[in-house]
Image 1 (cartoon, rainbow, N blue to C red):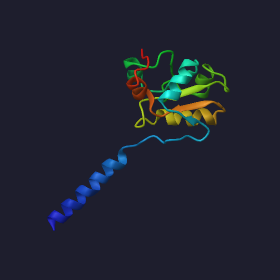
Image 2: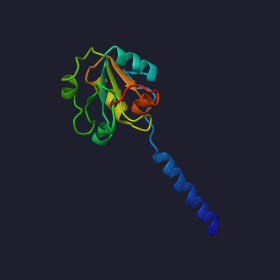
Image 3: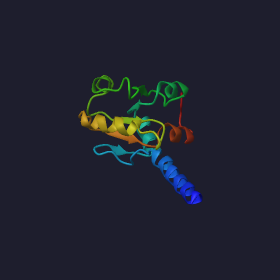
Image 4: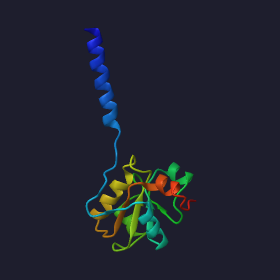
Length: 135
């Protein structure tokens, strides 16, 4: 009986841990999900890159020329509007699929009326892994 209870408890605990690992959505309504090649093309065409990561992540490295609008403390319709017009190309990024910040930022930007939002789900880790420039 004890072994059965222990096994059930371990299974429940394991499933709770797995369920806690959040993954960002693959798509955001109203935004265009892009891969690293498209992100590089937009970078080369001087699109605005918006980094919504924590301050410590920003300080550790970023895409050159990106604007830092930390999602929880700085990112608003006004702060984004100070950086770009509503019809300009804007690329949102954070720390890859395990980071929900760029998906949230992309959805909010669409809600605020920005029409050319690019959701770079793979984010800074993929950018760096592709040997793209970083600062």
